[in-house]
Length: 228
Image (cartoon, rainbow, N blue to C red):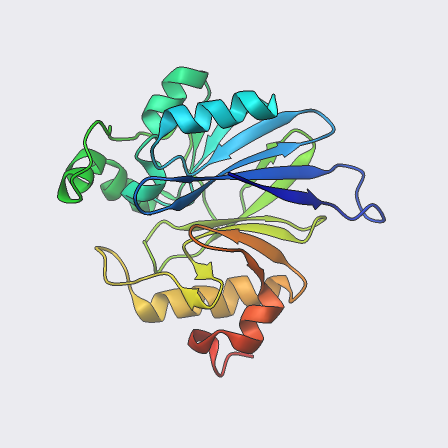
């Protein structure tokens, strides 16, 4: 587990956020515990598995978790969502409805990787382009960014200039597109038309590996060559 420093700009917003990354499953997926420090209300983002580790992190942080958010439907991001919902008694929000076919087959997907004990997931709320979700005093806009999966979404807080990217864009790479529903050109279009316009100063947590900021990726990410 690693603690990310306060993400705040005191000149633009009083509310502050803090985040803890809990790497889960053999895929080392970045399950993220994100909370508003003003209210101590939090959300767990992409609980792919290892639910006991996630619960221990929540208890250690002493955060009042009110939501589970999903960026997309791949098993390494959602495998523990149903169990965690039962444990915390909170709703699951996201991803976009286009990933329903993935959430309906979590058990089957886990079996292909030798992972047992998973459950299929039915969110309490699907997300669409332009929706807004909140955790405490922090508001996040939803951007539907298909390509890695048809229903991938990005969560963006403009005041903090911060995003939860899922597997859309990585530090030095982009999401794979060889899985069912993936499409390379669609993913590049999502990054070009929706992610890059957020601004070079926007920092992000991604689904695997270290985070980054959009400006760094625009300048150095080989998959973004030629994008304005």
